[in-house]
Length: 330
Image (cartoon, rainbow, N blue to C red; front, top):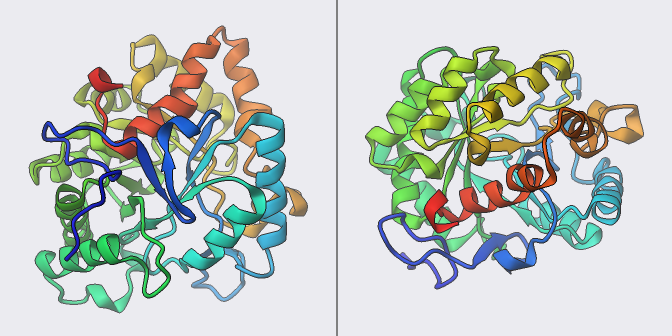
Protein backbone atom coordinates (compact mmCIF):
# COMPACT_ATOMS: atom_id res chain seq x y z
CA UNK A 1 0.00 0.00 0.00
CA UNK A 2 1.40 3.35 -1.03
CA UNK A 3 1.70 6.34 1.25
CA UNK A 4 -0.03 9.58 0.18
CA UNK A 5 2.21 11.83 -1.87
CA UNK A 6 3.52 15.06 -0.29
CA UNK A 7 0.75 17.10 -1.85
CA UNK A 8 -2.07 14.94 -0.49
CA UNK A 9 -4.31 16.08 2.36
CA UNK A 10 -3.03 15.41 5.84
CA UNK A 11 -5.01 13.47 8.40
CA UNK A 12 -6.18 16.49 10.35
CA UNK A 13 -4.03 15.44 13.31
CA UNK A 14 -1.59 18.33 13.27
CA UNK A 15 0.33 17.59 10.08
CA UNK A 16 0.94 20.36 7.56
CA UNK A 17 -2.01 21.00 5.30
CA UNK A 18 -1.69 20.35 1.57
CA UNK A 19 -1.18 22.79 -1.22
CA UNK A 20 -2.40 20.46 -3.94
CA UNK A 21 -5.68 18.86 -4.89
CA UNK A 22 -6.07 15.51 -6.59
CA UNK A 23 -7.83 16.03 -9.90
CA UNK A 24 -8.55 13.62 -12.74
CA UNK A 25 -5.80 15.23 -14.81
CA UNK A 26 -3.21 15.29 -12.02
CA UNK A 27 -2.25 17.31 -8.93
CA UNK A 28 -3.44 20.91 -8.79
CA UNK A 29 -2.17 23.64 -6.48
CA UNK A 30 -4.91 25.00 -4.25
CA UNK A 31 -3.64 28.49 -5.06
CA UNK A 32 -4.41 27.84 -8.75
CA UNK A 33 -8.16 27.74 -8.05
CA UNK A 34 -8.99 31.42 -8.39
CA UNK A 35 -12.69 31.09 -9.23
CA UNK A 36 -15.75 29.46 -7.68
CA UNK A 37 -16.07 25.73 -7.06
CA UNK A 38 -19.13 23.57 -7.69
CA UNK A 39 -18.96 21.41 -4.56
CA UNK A 40 -21.36 18.61 -5.56
CA UNK A 41 -22.00 17.72 -9.19
CA UNK A 42 -22.27 14.79 -11.58
CA UNK A 43 -20.77 14.90 -15.05
CA UNK A 44 -21.11 11.20 -15.91
CA UNK A 45 -23.78 9.13 -14.14
CA UNK A 46 -26.07 6.11 -14.45
CA UNK A 47 -28.72 5.66 -11.76
CA UNK A 48 -31.27 4.20 -14.18
CA UNK A 49 -33.15 1.52 -12.26
CA UNK A 50 -36.45 2.16 -14.02
CA UNK A 51 -35.08 1.59 -17.51
CA UNK A 52 -36.32 4.95 -18.82
CA UNK A 53 -32.86 6.49 -19.20
CA UNK A 54 -33.80 9.61 -17.22
CA UNK A 55 -31.25 9.43 -14.41
CA UNK A 56 -28.33 9.22 -16.83
CA UNK A 57 -25.49 11.44 -18.02
CA UNK A 58 -23.94 9.29 -20.73
CA UNK A 59 -20.17 9.50 -21.20
CA UNK A 60 -20.55 9.75 -24.99
CA UNK A 61 -24.05 11.02 -25.68
CA UNK A 62 -24.14 13.88 -23.18
CA UNK A 63 -20.44 14.77 -22.92
CA UNK A 64 -20.52 17.53 -25.57
CA UNK A 65 -23.33 19.32 -23.73
CA UNK A 66 -21.56 18.95 -20.37
CA UNK A 67 -18.30 20.24 -21.84
CA UNK A 68 -20.09 23.19 -23.43
CA UNK A 69 -21.69 24.17 -20.13
CA UNK A 70 -18.48 23.93 -18.12
CA UNK A 71 -16.54 25.85 -20.76
CA UNK A 72 -19.11 28.65 -20.72
CA UNK A 73 -19.03 28.81 -16.92
CA UNK A 74 -15.24 29.00 -16.94
CA UNK A 75 -15.34 31.83 -19.44
CA UNK A 76 -18.28 33.74 -17.95
CA UNK A 77 -17.92 33.13 -14.22
CA UNK A 78 -14.35 31.90 -13.79
CA UNK A 79 -15.41 28.39 -12.72
CA UNK A 80 -12.31 27.01 -11.03
CA UNK A 81 -13.15 23.42 -10.04
CA UNK A 82 -15.90 20.80 -10.06
CA UNK A 83 -16.20 18.20 -7.30
CA UNK A 84 -17.74 15.20 -9.05
CA UNK A 85 -19.37 12.86 -6.53
CA UNK A 86 -20.34 9.91 -8.73
CA UNK A 87 -19.00 6.92 -6.81
CA UNK A 88 -19.01 3.11 -6.97
CA UNK A 89 -22.29 1.72 -8.31
CA UNK A 90 -23.37 5.08 -9.79
CA UNK A 91 -21.95 4.66 -13.28
CA UNK A 92 -18.63 6.32 -12.47
CA UNK A 93 -16.24 6.76 -15.41
CA UNK A 94 -12.94 8.41 -14.42
CA UNK A 95 -11.54 8.42 -17.96
CA UNK A 96 -14.63 10.22 -19.24
CA UNK A 97 -14.18 12.76 -16.44
CA UNK A 98 -10.60 13.31 -17.56
CA UNK A 99 -11.80 13.95 -21.13
CA UNK A 100 -14.45 16.40 -19.93
CA UNK A 101 -11.89 18.22 -17.79
CA UNK A 102 -9.37 18.44 -20.60
CA UNK A 103 -11.94 19.58 -23.17
CA UNK A 104 -13.55 22.20 -20.92
CA UNK A 105 -10.42 23.46 -19.20
CA UNK A 106 -12.12 22.99 -15.80
CA UNK A 107 -10.32 20.82 -13.20
CA UNK A 108 -12.42 17.95 -11.81
CA UNK A 109 -12.06 16.03 -8.54
CA UNK A 110 -13.38 12.44 -8.68
CA UNK A 111 -14.80 10.39 -5.80
CA UNK A 112 -14.90 6.96 -4.25
CA UNK A 113 -17.32 5.37 -1.80
CA UNK A 114 -20.88 4.07 -1.90
CA UNK A 115 -24.22 5.83 -2.42
CA UNK A 116 -27.31 4.95 -0.39
CA UNK A 117 -28.63 1.40 -0.07
CA UNK A 118 -31.02 1.12 -3.06
CA UNK A 119 -27.99 1.76 -5.28
CA UNK A 120 -25.46 -0.42 -3.46
CA UNK A 121 -23.56 -2.84 -5.74
CA UNK A 122 -23.25 -6.50 -4.77
CA UNK A 123 -19.74 -5.94 -3.39
CA UNK A 124 -21.28 -4.63 -0.15
CA UNK A 125 -23.22 -7.84 0.51
CA UNK A 126 -21.78 -9.38 3.65
CA UNK A 127 -18.56 -7.35 3.47
CA UNK A 128 -17.15 -6.14 6.78
CA UNK A 129 -16.21 -2.57 7.55
CA UNK A 130 -12.56 -3.61 7.41
CA UNK A 131 -12.98 -5.16 3.95
CA UNK A 132 -14.83 -2.12 2.64
CA UNK A 133 -12.19 0.19 4.09
CA UNK A 134 -9.46 -1.78 2.32
CA UNK A 135 -11.34 -1.41 -0.97
CA UNK A 136 -11.53 2.36 -0.59
CA UNK A 137 -7.95 2.81 0.60
CA UNK A 138 -6.71 0.64 -2.27
CA UNK A 139 -8.55 2.82 -4.77
CA UNK A 140 -7.30 6.03 -3.15
CA UNK A 141 -3.68 4.83 -3.09
CA UNK A 142 -3.53 2.97 -6.40
CA UNK A 143 -6.18 4.65 -8.53
CA UNK A 144 -9.23 3.53 -10.47
CA UNK A 145 -8.16 0.27 -12.08
CA UNK A 146 -5.21 0.86 -14.41
CA UNK A 147 -6.24 4.43 -15.35
CA UNK A 148 -3.69 6.17 -13.15
CA UNK A 149 -6.52 8.45 -11.98
CA UNK A 150 -7.06 8.69 -8.23
CA UNK A 151 -10.00 10.04 -6.22
CA UNK A 152 -9.67 13.30 -4.34
CA UNK A 153 -12.69 12.92 -2.05
CA UNK A 154 -14.88 10.24 -0.47
CA UNK A 155 -18.48 10.71 -1.54
CA UNK A 156 -21.30 10.83 -1.95
CA UNK A 157 -21.58 8.38 0.92
CA UNK A 158 -25.29 7.83 1.32
CA UNK A 159 -28.11 7.06 3.71
CA UNK A 160 -31.85 7.56 3.64
CA UNK A 161 -34.21 8.14 6.53
CA UNK A 162 -33.38 9.51 9.94
CA UNK A 163 -30.84 6.76 10.65
CA UNK A 164 -28.60 4.79 8.28
CA UNK A 165 -29.47 1.17 7.55
CA UNK A 166 -27.00 -1.61 8.40
CA UNK A 167 -25.29 -1.58 4.98
CA UNK A 168 -25.29 2.23 4.93
CA UNK A 169 -23.69 2.25 8.38
CA UNK A 170 -20.91 -0.04 7.15
CA UNK A 171 -20.34 2.16 4.10
CA UNK A 172 -20.19 5.32 6.23
CA UNK A 173 -17.81 3.75 8.73
CA UNK A 174 -15.58 2.48 5.93
CA UNK A 175 -15.50 6.00 4.49
CA UNK A 176 -14.52 7.42 7.88
CA UNK A 177 -11.73 4.87 8.33
CA UNK A 178 -10.48 5.43 4.77
CA UNK A 179 -10.53 9.18 5.36
CA UNK A 180 -8.44 8.78 8.50
CA UNK A 181 -6.00 6.50 6.68
CA UNK A 182 -5.54 8.66 3.58
CA UNK A 183 -6.39 12.26 4.48
CA UNK A 184 -9.34 12.65 2.11
CA UNK A 185 -12.55 14.28 3.31
CA UNK A 186 -16.08 12.79 3.27
CA UNK A 187 -19.14 14.21 1.50
CA UNK A 188 -22.46 12.53 2.27
CA UNK A 189 -25.82 12.02 0.61
CA UNK A 190 -28.62 12.62 3.12
CA UNK A 191 -31.78 11.67 1.25
CA UNK A 192 -34.06 14.74 1.16
CA UNK A 193 -31.80 16.26 3.79
CA UNK A 194 -32.80 13.78 6.49
CA UNK A 195 -30.34 11.93 8.70
CA UNK A 196 -27.51 14.47 8.67
CA UNK A 197 -27.17 14.46 12.45
CA UNK A 198 -27.00 10.65 12.51
CA UNK A 199 -24.37 10.67 9.75
CA UNK A 200 -22.32 13.23 11.65
CA UNK A 201 -22.52 11.22 14.88
CA UNK A 202 -21.42 8.04 13.10
CA UNK A 203 -18.51 9.65 11.26
CA UNK A 204 -17.19 11.64 14.21
CA UNK A 205 -17.69 8.62 16.45
CA UNK A 206 -15.22 6.80 14.22
CA UNK A 207 -12.70 9.57 14.90
CA UNK A 208 -13.15 11.83 11.87
CA UNK A 209 -12.97 15.56 12.61
CA UNK A 210 -16.19 17.47 11.79
CA UNK A 211 -14.40 19.93 9.48
CA UNK A 212 -13.58 16.99 7.19
CA UNK A 213 -17.28 16.17 6.74
CA UNK A 214 -19.87 17.72 4.42
CA UNK A 215 -23.50 16.81 5.10
CA UNK A 216 -25.35 16.70 1.80
CA UNK A 217 -28.68 18.06 0.57
CA UNK A 218 -29.46 20.11 3.66
CA UNK A 219 -31.28 22.67 1.49
CA UNK A 220 -34.02 20.04 1.07
CA UNK A 221 -34.67 20.06 4.83
CA UNK A 222 -36.61 23.05 6.12
CA UNK A 223 -35.07 22.87 9.58
CA UNK A 224 -32.86 25.88 10.44
CA UNK A 225 -32.17 24.54 13.92
CA UNK A 226 -30.68 21.34 12.45
CA UNK A 227 -28.54 23.39 10.07
CA UNK A 228 -27.25 25.47 12.96
CA UNK A 229 -26.44 22.36 14.99
CA UNK A 230 -24.52 20.78 12.12
CA UNK A 231 -22.59 23.98 11.44
CA UNK A 232 -21.86 24.61 15.12
CA UNK A 233 -20.22 21.17 15.29
CA UNK A 234 -17.71 22.33 12.68
CA UNK A 235 -19.09 20.24 9.80
CA UNK A 236 -19.98 21.69 6.41
CA UNK A 237 -23.65 22.15 5.57
CA UNK A 238 -24.20 21.53 1.86
CA UNK A 239 -26.90 23.50 0.09
CA UNK A 240 -26.16 21.50 -3.01
CA UNK A 241 -29.42 21.02 -4.92
CA UNK A 242 -29.85 24.65 -5.93
CA UNK A 243 -32.33 24.96 -8.78
CA UNK A 244 -34.09 21.64 -8.19
CA UNK A 245 -37.44 23.31 -7.80
CA UNK A 246 -39.41 20.05 -7.90
CA UNK A 247 -37.75 19.10 -4.60
CA UNK A 248 -37.53 22.52 -2.94
CA UNK A 249 -38.07 26.06 -4.16
CA UNK A 250 -35.10 28.40 -4.40
CA UNK A 251 -37.16 30.85 -2.34
CA UNK A 252 -37.07 28.43 0.59
CA UNK A 253 -33.40 27.67 -0.08
CA UNK A 254 -32.60 31.36 0.08
CA UNK A 255 -34.47 31.76 3.36
CA UNK A 256 -32.62 28.79 4.88
CA UNK A 257 -29.27 30.03 3.65
CA UNK A 258 -29.81 33.54 4.99
CA UNK A 259 -30.81 32.10 8.37
CA UNK A 260 -27.56 30.15 8.50
CA UNK A 261 -25.56 33.22 7.53
CA UNK A 262 -27.33 35.34 10.11
CA UNK A 263 -26.42 32.74 12.73
CA UNK A 264 -22.75 33.34 11.89
CA UNK A 265 -22.05 30.13 9.96
CA UNK A 266 -20.99 31.38 6.52
CA UNK A 267 -17.71 29.49 6.95
CA UNK A 268 -19.62 26.17 7.04
CA UNK A 269 -21.66 26.55 3.82
CA UNK A 270 -21.08 24.70 0.52
CA UNK A 271 -23.14 25.45 -2.60
CA UNK A 272 -23.84 23.47 -5.77
CA UNK A 273 -26.59 22.23 -8.11
CA UNK A 274 -26.26 18.39 -8.10
CA UNK A 275 -27.04 17.90 -11.81
CA UNK A 276 -28.03 14.23 -11.84
CA UNK A 277 -30.01 13.60 -15.03
CA UNK A 278 -29.70 14.77 -18.61
CA UNK A 279 -32.98 16.71 -18.51
CA UNK A 280 -31.26 19.17 -16.14
CA UNK A 281 -28.76 20.15 -18.85
CA UNK A 282 -29.32 23.55 -20.49
CA UNK A 283 -29.25 21.92 -23.92
CA UNK A 284 -32.40 20.03 -22.89
CA UNK A 285 -34.16 22.99 -21.32
CA UNK A 286 -32.95 22.41 -17.78
CA UNK A 287 -31.37 24.76 -15.26
CA UNK A 288 -27.83 23.51 -15.92
CA UNK A 289 -24.67 23.65 -13.84
CA UNK A 290 -24.69 27.44 -14.01
CA UNK A 291 -28.00 27.99 -12.24
CA UNK A 292 -26.10 28.77 -9.05
CA UNK A 293 -24.23 31.64 -10.74
CA UNK A 294 -26.90 32.91 -13.11
CA UNK A 295 -29.96 32.78 -10.87
CA UNK A 296 -29.37 31.93 -7.21
CA UNK A 297 -26.31 34.02 -6.34
CA UNK A 298 -27.86 37.20 -7.81
CA UNK A 299 -30.72 36.67 -5.33
CA UNK A 300 -28.19 36.15 -2.53
CA UNK A 301 -26.48 39.41 -3.48
CA UNK A 302 -29.83 41.19 -3.60
CA UNK A 303 -30.31 40.10 0.03
CA UNK A 304 -27.22 42.22 0.90
CA UNK A 305 -24.72 39.35 1.13
CA UNK A 306 -21.34 40.79 0.18
CA UNK A 307 -18.79 39.45 -2.30
CA UNK A 308 -16.38 38.30 0.38
CA UNK A 309 -19.01 35.98 1.86
CA UNK A 310 -19.94 34.71 -1.59
CA UNK A 311 -16.28 33.95 -2.31
CA UNK A 312 -16.08 32.22 1.08
CA UNK A 313 -19.05 29.96 0.32
CA UNK A 314 -18.20 29.23 -3.30
CA UNK A 315 -14.39 29.00 -3.26
CA UNK A 316 -12.60 29.09 0.09
CA UNK A 317 -14.98 26.75 1.92
CA UNK A 318 -14.88 23.92 -0.66
CA UNK A 319 -11.09 24.20 -0.88
CA UNK A 320 -10.80 24.00 2.91
CA UNK A 321 -13.15 21.02 2.93
CA UNK A 322 -11.21 19.14 0.25
CA UNK A 323 -7.84 19.75 1.89
CA UNK A 324 -8.97 19.08 5.45
CA UNK A 325 -7.96 22.54 6.63
CA UNK A 326 -9.91 23.84 9.58
CA UNK A 327 -11.05 27.44 9.96
CA UNK A 328 -7.99 28.51 11.95
CA UNK A 329 -5.66 27.19 9.26
CA UNK A 330 -7.56 28.72 6.34
